[in-house]
Length: 117
Image (cartoon, rainbow, N blue to C red; front, side, top):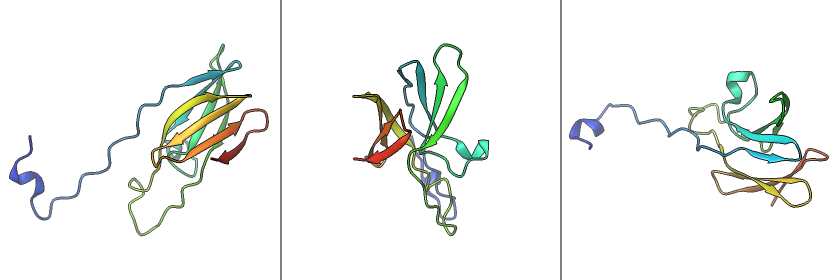
């Protein structure tokens, strides 16, 4: 329950909520997971990244950027992050990706090319 102090003038605005939980998907011996916190690993952005693991050993195989986030340096970065919301196996060796803005992407797992649908 909120009280009057929660919206007091001069209080900082609450940060955005964290990224959604995304269920991993296994296709052809690889497990795919949304990598939300790329910057913690030296990558250029948070969100928009998929990580592939060998399903049997758990060894990381690769990280693929699904879409780029163009950060505005005049705004707080965390409100600009766009996270992956859903991963799903697609037809013919593809991985379907949906971001929290509702954009749809398809990854051709043979060539690691991404197309926006």
